[in-house]
Amino acid sequence: MSVEDENVDAVGATASPLSHFGAEVRLERERLGMSRAELGKEACCGYSLVAKIESGDRVPALDFAETCDRVFPHAGGRFVRLWPLALRYAFPPWFRRYVELEWSATAVRMFHPLLLPGIVQTEAYAREVLRTGRPTNLDHLVSARMERQRILTRDDPPRLWIVLDEGVLRRAVGGSDVMCGQLERLRALADSPPHVVQIIPSSIAVYPGSGSPFGLLSFEEGPDVVHVDGFPKGYVLAESEDVASATSAYDLLAATALPPDESAPLIDSILKDHFS
Image: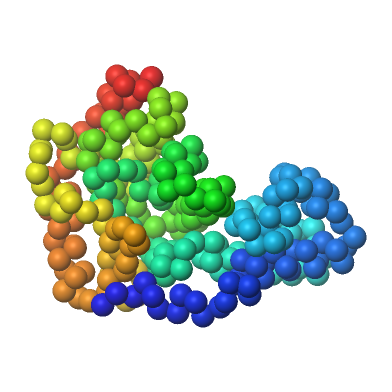
């Protein structure tokens, strides 16, 4: 059963939570007699970003929502409460259901044979990846991806387990500077319990599930779900047979990959030999 289309357009584009968030910012700012430049100074951002947030054209950072709650006398914590819903609607309709599930997951397992998953991409790496689709809203897409990563820095982060093909580490996305920053980020993650990073070495040419990136989400309550990353859009599967197949495939991938204590030195070696 595919669940990615479930209630994706329950709120129209003109009244989406993202647009509503922006409208509320503008209402409170004007009520206070504050200019966009003044709000931008409080939020450590520019006039143009405030304008884009107010028009619903840019996802707000959590820091921006916190600033609004601090600056606007009648906010009452409203902007931080609105922020998760606004973030969800910053993504394409087919991806919103996954973002919602990811936000509540207690464990996230991912496999990718070609790229670093979005959840661990640096801003520079994400920009290069997203740029390939020639979007007209590149800054918006990058901001949304970076804000999605907030789940890893909150007080109760999910356990992240990533299995990657070694080729992912060697593929020069954006050049040496971009890759250096990205591999340093991955290396830091590998050293941060309870997260796990495993690399399938290039000496293993064929392995289970090598053709398609996918992931598994686990929750405090309820069954696991599977996310398949595909073109032109990914989808979420919840049928027990699909989840069982994906779990078996992931277990085999983890067994095939180098153990964590050997994967980390491999990241160091590629970083030193190819991108330093």
